[in-house]
Length: 89
Image 1 (tube, rainbow, N blue to C red):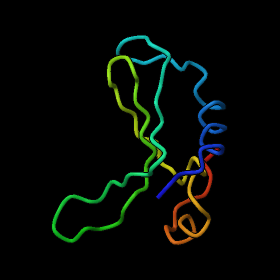
Image 2 (cartoon, rainbow, N blue to C red):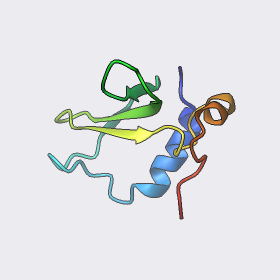
Image 3 (cartoon, rainbow, N blue to C red):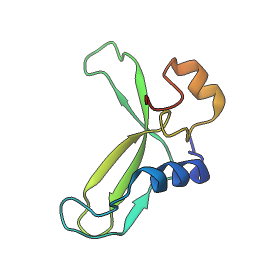
Image 4 (tube, rainbow, N blue to C red):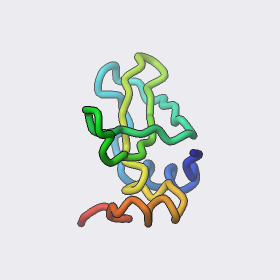
């Protein structure tokens, strides 16, 4: 499923005051437009968490951002997930 890049860019820009890679110090990032998911380990599957994958283009350091917290998923996905639609303040 595609993420809303405009909403994610707004979220990313507002919260990443230092957009420097912790591994190599580069400031160039690639954002995957397709949401990935993290599921519970084991045979039952469990709940899935949609993630935005952000990768440093210099060293490959990869950061996973909850797509629901970033408000980058379509409304029907956020409602079905039961997760908070915005970060706790």
